[in-house]
Length: 278
Length: 312
Image 1 (tube, one colour):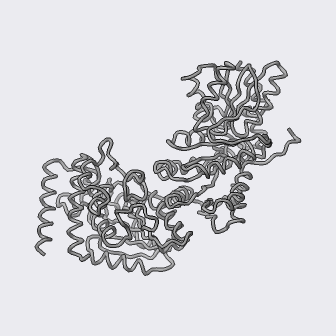
Image 2 (cartoon, rainbow over the protein chains, first blue to last red):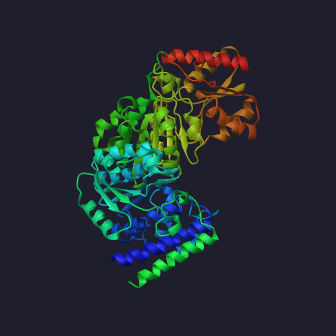
Image 3 (cartoon, rainbow over the protein chains, first blue to last red):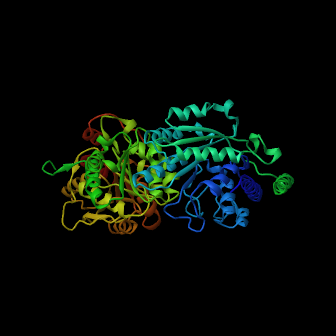
């Protein structure tokens, strides 16, 4: 798939995110939008998956360690064909399978339940270890927030992955620089993120989370690394794609009102039209 | 009971894993730098490639087990009860139980019978903590025979299981031909018409001795071994309560949240009879030899006998 096609899909995924959070009147748009291009690349280019056989043993696994950006994952899965896009409007509603945080029991395509920060990476490491133990070829991807890496369990998991040389594991950090209480550097700085993962025996790749060519280079390079797990630190913009949400910590976990929803959708429509004219 | 064979259920755990490892090639054992104490070292010796030492990082260990289970393996997570049920509580709840993953938690060194290490290592809350989690099976075997049976039952059960094991060598009481283990089924070990003692773990043997002491006073106690705290054998407990009119629960655990609470929850609804809950009375433990602590906290046969005589 070429860059333009990926950009178009990512734009549709962003519309799904905004629509889902608006319908739910709650949820996490900021981090979902910052991760939208990463999700798009993973599900439309990188991973060995097939929506028609979501539980196939040989599939690559994905664990959304930053589980609160479920709208981003759900919109991606829906656009990839795991379930109807229309269902995104049921997010967080009583009786809906689209729970506020990913629930593996009921959502096709969700490989692990998550939401409590720091726990997803351990499960991903366990899956990668499992593949090594039985000589399976699948790869495991996990997406973490840059605020999430303040959790100590992340580093327990990183130590284990480095120690076990899990080169079938790719940890992606969505480095949008913001958490609920403000700038991550002000709240409790996790920087330097790359040096920390290097110290835990990871191969580290710094990249731009919104540049599909850069993402392609990063994930291709990750496949070539042997004997080490890989951490991709993806510099991103929280709220990316919706002007008034960009770089605003306040949009971490707030739903747009009707007016804001309309403006966000207009902006995304225009962005989509612009992509179609390219 | 000095002539009776004694073995700590943590030893039984290690032995059972080593034995069952040959039968179940999908069985993996995780430990957090305590393989010598939890006795998973026995399994490690037999199946080194299936023993995973996670280092001193219990929360991550539980998550690793979740990942192994999500990809079709049967992992046993091993640590002291304090760390397996306590430190990693939220990981057990959110990474194992919520997604209903097939993870088994083998928690050793439970209760005050940990002994000299003292209060920080004497978990008295694990049965309560684990019992509150939806879908969690909670077992507390009474001896070597039962502990081994519980391990295999856990393997055959599809879903999360917590099994509590002890450090102290305790009498083997279930070595008889007609012994059968079934998750959720209590076992009547002694008949009696005057009251029912419902006991779990190492307190089963102590309760049997206490029943003998009561018999000398003309009080005939029925003794039930509850090896599965959840799901509780409500039918058996209710029937015994109706039959004997009085119930005593005995556990090496806080009187809050464990067996006593589970029994009271059922009896208050279905057979409200007077209940005496024997356990640790909402205090932390302390250092000392295990048997001396069991005596001090009135959790040996003599203490159980005294407390029953005072209550009824």
